[in-house]
Amino acid sequence: MRLVACAAWAAALGLSGAAIAQGQPSADELVAKNLAARGGTDALAALKSVKFTGKLIFPGDFQLAYDETRAHEAKGDATRVNASIQGLTLVQAYDGANGWRINPFQGRRDAEKMTEDEARSMADSALIDGVLLSAKKEDAKVAYLGREDFDGTLGYKLKVSQPDGDEFVYLLDPDTFLEIKMTETRRLRGAQQVTEYELGDYEKVGGVYFPMSIDSWQPGQSNQRQRVIIASAEANVPVPPSMFAQPADAAKPTLPGPTDKNLQPRDKNEKPADSDVPHPSKPKAE
Image 1: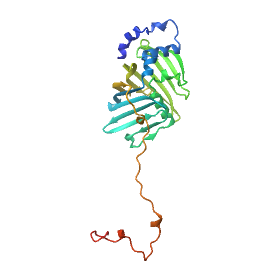
Image 2: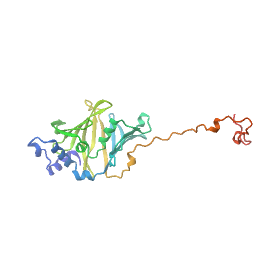
Image 3: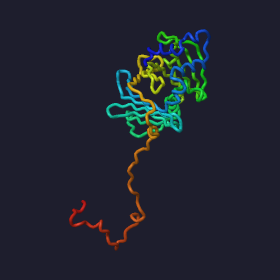
Image 4: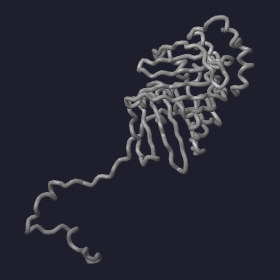
């Protein structure tokens, strides 16, 4: 279901903005309405994995094939994202505890472990419920910050503050209570990094609504957007844990080292080994 068509659906569930317009809503009330809008507790609990397939578009219409898989794993929520073009595939993954990547576009063919900051970002991306609905179990704080206009829509503004210092500010559509914008503030390599996102074209996957269009950009650079467009999505796909595990580097060939025998000088009276004697059928090496 597309976002523009969600208003009638939300009204049928009694989720119109008028329902909370009589008083100032609390953060808990808005989170509850977002949960209901996404599909509800039971639908989210039944969703064990989800796979998205589409394309990643950079400024200048540079396009890559895109697929993303998220799953509940024993270590925690895990994710893997592949972006491919002309036989090269960029991989970014999180196994529930550690993050890793393979970036052939920078000349690397082997997997490398992500920094702690990078892995923390991937951990948030792995959450099937999303950061907002996972806030309580992640010991994050959620605060209501009032209303804010975004492209003519006066959304409800919620701020999620995580224990590690990362912050997420969401705007909820006043009719559907789905996320339409998110501003992410992270600490990466000792510096603060802010990224803005626009979310839209929501469709139901396994009973849960996900955005099928996600734009991202740096503050003040909205004309330089990176876009993910999802063409298809599947719920509860079989996912082997090995999909998220960091592969070992390819074994490097090693030459045999010297032995005690070939370190010892040969006795001048010792008969040479057969391999040392030129064979009649073979020319002697120059």
